[in-house]
Length: 379
Image (cartoon, rainbow, N blue to C red; front, top):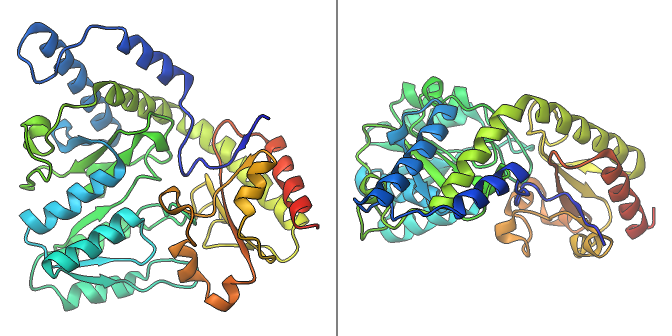
């Protein structure tokens, strides 16, 4: 059975160009990029070309790009280094961040007593910028870190990142944004943002799994949390995943070239899906701002269907349709984001589905999804 895939927020399929590029690289004789012989130097030059390529796309300096094994590792590197090296004792975040943020911050609270403060949200999960400014103004006596994601991976809400950057700059706070769902889907101008930390993960923009990067603004004295080597400017020890890095560099390059065209195409797929869901599913709710084409990312739609089915993603899978009920990192649990938006009584009356689109989806895929939902819920 051919699967209809609507879980692009969890991972995206590798582009053919990326596959071909990686295969051709795998056939080459490469050395360890830390070695000083000719093959090592050749590999180092390939590695640095990839770093330069990614930096240019983000309008960053190549020295500010640190390769990691994932977006989760990048977030950990940034958050833990802020505590260890920047003397951060107070962090402002939100309750709807990715678990790689929330669980890491909880660990930092337990181990080091770091104060974690949560900014207010409205009913749609939008950050209250006035509350953020109040918290910064009230606690402005020591170094502060603000950690707020650019695009929410479950409901698709887009943060007003330029306003947050300006507020943080006003109060001289460090700003880290989990940009994993945004990179490859929006142009990110690091210099224009004047942000301190961002991160990316290749498999979110049609690159390989198991490779990501952290952007750490030049001048911040960040030390390694993984030690045992001088790789990545002594910020992240361990032999670099050269083939993964090459694939990531090619994937972000193609995503950047195709961004405008693919954004328009996927937006139309999302609009069609919203229209068909409204027409076909009585009482459907669109969670967060996910039904807004302007205020949410064009790749994510999060819905609540007013009939309870804890096995909805499994039942759709049996019919050949792949969706999720939340983040892939916690796919068997009720989403913490949905828990924030819905009270328990209301939650028990709904089924929750995240539908996430990619450039390979077609309108006929939406028709198949709608037909399966109507069949499962006997609509």
